[in-house]
Amino acid sequence: QVQLVESGGGLVQAGGSLRLSCAASGGTFSRYAMGWFRLRPGKEREFVASINWSSDITYYPDSVKGRFTISRDNTKNTVYLQMNNLKPEDTAVYYCAARSSGLAATSTSLYGYWGQGTQVTVSS
Image (tube, rainbow, N blue to C red; front, top):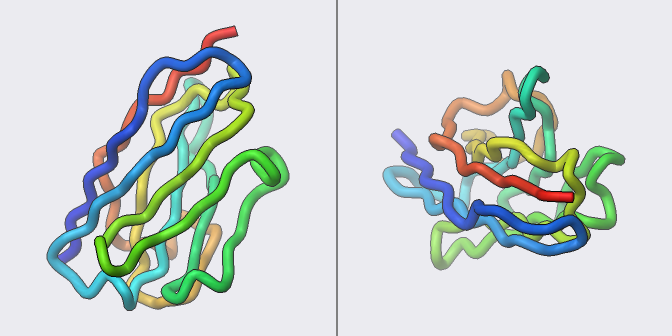
């Protein structure tokens, strides 16, 4: 059983940056693909970024491509989401997720483990 704990959210002005972290425990982190998703007010949970077990494959939707970067440190059992040039529409609760297959994926249904989420608020 994998437990995931996100941190690093907060309030930032438009154009600013934040780095989210997600610490994993209870499983073999290096075997899992990891993803970040977000839930914006009035919308369904949406894909933000994913990374495979070895960090050589990443996926992003067009809405964040070039602004967000996912990375992981398997020695620290942690995955990160660096968010630059933030926009008010990036305001959301951000969730970390783990997939027991090591292959990165974009669909929420393919991830079996989820964190509690961390709030990111971007002011205009």
